[in-house]
Image (cartoon, rainbow, N blue to C red; front, top):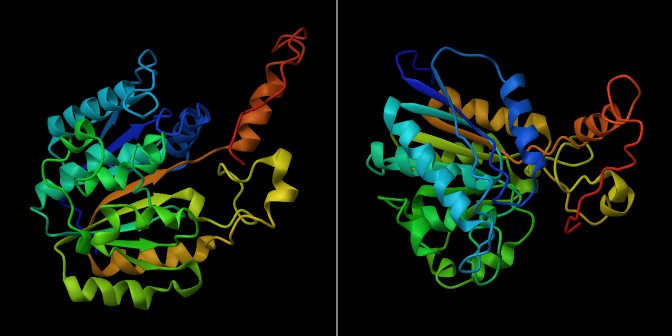
Length: 299
């Protein structure tokens, strides 16, 4: 459902500290370059590169908090009706989704399109990108929960495409919330629209982590590590096809007032390798540079 009278803000948020992977900076900026240039306001969240210590079990906690607070200030400056957030790791959606849930007085549904539920606690996972939805639900580190004036209720949230880290849904107090989910193999528009029809929200916001896509089709995601791809492709659960998620989100957009879209965790492997190569060539780079592209990943 298109509303041309909506005041929209496009927020470029190249945060990398939530997953401790700097390539998310380039990933976010490429998303911004590739995304259609629509009318509306634009802001970019600046990054705190200094406060990267682990605090209270969370890597770079202070930097992430500082960036969330800046994002909130930028959003409130414009007071938009809708938000497009181009990230960055998953935790970029903390301030925007908190703002929208408050603006629409909780009469909003959340489609969490992601291979992971992002409801971890600092005691079981140290990177904040896996904790952001827990914070939006009012659970987790107190400082992050304070950034959510009106927490989401469990019945507002529907997971689409979960394939891993499902054990986090069994963690106290998350398991008591009975969050609903549609698996990758069962996902289609009719199921999502039926869930929305039961709730009849005035607005919908969508968190879209690109890692929900199948790595055999789309390789600009963290788990599609080229150096280990052949080994990983038989171990990583099959993700969603692009056309499936496009169809679902288009059908939702035709029937409901979508006011939030956060696109996160674009990991542009080919661009990163190309950048490394260009920096080591004659005339445009340093021929003495022998540094190959290497990252320390959990994959």
